[in-house]
Structures are given as structure tokens and as C-alpha cells.
Amino acid sequence: MDKIENVPGHVSIIMDGNGRWAKERGLERCSGHIEGVESVRACTEAAVESGVKYLSLYAFSEENWGRPREEVESLMGLMLKSVTGELSNFMQNGIRFMVLGNRARLSDGLNSVIDDCMKKTEGNAGLTLIIFLSYSGRWDILQAARKLASEIAARPELAAGLEDMDADGFGRYLVTSGIPDPDLIIRTSGEQRLSNYLLWQGAYSELFFTDTLWPDFRKPEFYSALCEYSKRDRRYGKVK
Ligand code: IPE
Ligand code: IPE
Ligand code: MG
Image (cartoon, rainbow, N blue to C red; front, side, top):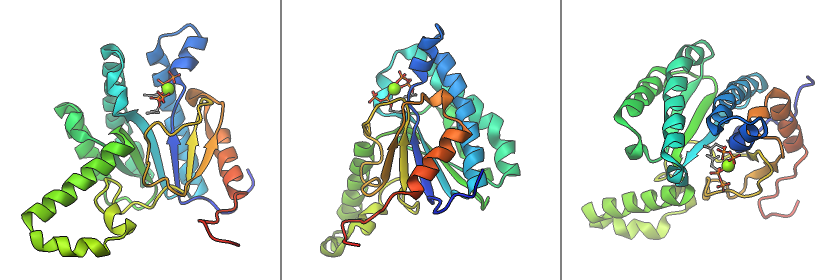
């Protein structure tokens, strides 16, 4: 593989198409989710190799709670198994692991495994791997606004400073505080929508859509997306 120019610092993926991948093979939807975990592994490796600093993955949206109970349970079970099983890999490869989203909706068991993995890997200086779980962009903006409002309710003198608050200032209340905005958002499976993902943070992200279903999205597909990104011209509203 030739060296890729202009590697994005933060790559984010909307991992879609597991159900269709399974259906094409006459399998249950959960087989697609299980195979999708292999793609997570492959893309994590590719991100480390290519020098990407942040890889974030949309694993479960707030809206996904509305899926049939068995599917939700199998996804949460898979998450628990993967987080537990990957810890040694994270330590070996210097990966810092994070889960962001509405953690209050997750089970105590899953939350404690996540907390343990985040704590053990927090000093790792390589790739930061972020899993967005029970996340949605509108929920994130709402929880930020609530946090800000309750801070001001507790200390009314802070209200005067609101005039000077800019987008970066507000961004510190989002769950992604301290994490750079995604440079590239990839969505697999042919759908061309954001499905309530990183609505604030994705304001100037480059978007890459591919028909490949998530379980088939492996290293070559990841590198192709990086190549495509390297040809993009980001102008941020300015004239070049
Ligand atoms: C993505 O695959 C995984 C999650 C959203 C949890 P889907 O389960 O949405 O697969 P399709 O879109 O039905 O094929
Ligand atoms: C988006 O996929 C959410 C995740 C990949 C976690 P969905 O399959 O839930 O999105 P829609 O329903 O096609 O918009
Ligand atoms: Mg889908």
C-alpha cells in the first residue's frame, strides 16, 4: 500500500448494513452484527497503521432502542463481549478506548465493563477509539443546553458571560468535549443520510458514502476512503 497523503486526524464511521448483509445470506440479523465486529477490528488496525489519531464509530443510536427487544439485547450482549475481549488488544497497541452517549440507558453490567476499559486505557497515547452508544446528535445538543442552563441556575452571575460564548465554548458542553471534530464521516450500505449523528461536530466534515455493507468494509475499503479524502478540497466557506 502506497503511503497516503493528508491522513485525516479524525475518521468517523456510520456502520450500516449489517441486517442486509445477513439477509442476503439467509441468516438472522444478529449474524450481521457479529460479522460487523470483524470490520471494527480491521478498521481499528487500519487506523493505527495509517496514523489516524481518532477513530469514532456509530454503534447504536438513541432511535435504535426502538428495535425489537431480542435485537437490542443481542447488540448490547455483543458490546459487552467485545469490550471485555478487546482490552488486552487495546493495551498492546496503545489504544485509548471511550464510549460516548446516553450512558444512563445502558445496563449497570455494561456500564461497569465500559468504565473499567476506559480507566485502564486512559493513559494510552496511540489511537483514540470512540464508540458512540445510545447516542444521537440532537440528544447531545440538548444535554449540553441542559448542563449549561443548570450551571447558570446555580450561579446566575455566569449569565452575563453568555454573550461572549462562541461555538467552541458551547462545544465544551457536548459529550465530545476535547475531541476534535471529525474530518471525514464515512457511511456504509448506500444510505446517504446522517441519521442523527454528530449534527454539531460534523458541520464541516467531508462525507463519504459507499454501497459496501458494513460487514464487508475492511482494510482495503478503509484505505480507499482515506485516498478519496486526500483529494478533497476543504474551503470552510472561504475562497482559495
Ligand atoms: C447497522 O446495521 C447496525 C446498527 C444500526 C445497530 P443495521 O442493523 O442498521 O443494518 P440494516 O441497515 O438493517 O441493513
Ligand atoms: C444509523 O443506522 C445508526 C447506526 C449505524 C448506529 P440506522 O440503520 O439506525 O439508520 P436509518 O434507520 O437507516 O436511518
Ligand atoms: Mg441500518
